[in-house]
Picture 1: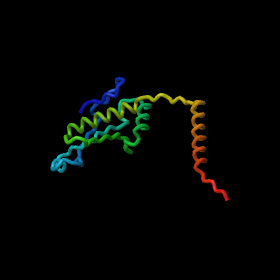
Picture 2: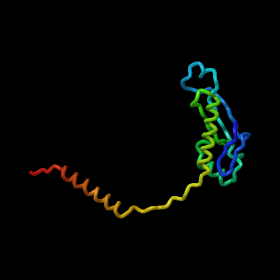
Picture 3: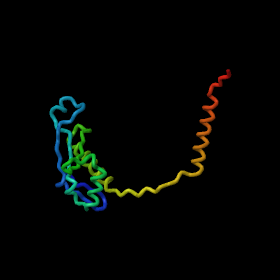
Picture 4: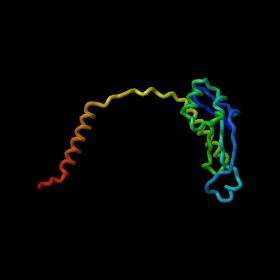
Length: 140
């Protein structure tokens, strides 16, 4: 396995990653029943060479992928080859960690423009007129 490069000079050594294999589902004939081609890569978030703030950000953004032991897990079974699945899982793990570490710009609040408000009210009035014309007049 190779080291993960998270950008900004952050390198996660391959020794921190654990890879396990299992039988994959889906098409593949007899190969599916014999070969363990599914690859799961795990890394303990606490062991990552990051400061506490970045670890917290990873825990928040990737909470659905982190188990109760604090391990971040990525699985790949898209290819028939174990090697291709391992490479794919490592790339996905690297991308997930990179995206989680990216700082998001704070959102700027915006107001609805006066023209947009006017268009909305005009559209409502048009719809009201259309419905008024549909009404059936009953003269007794």
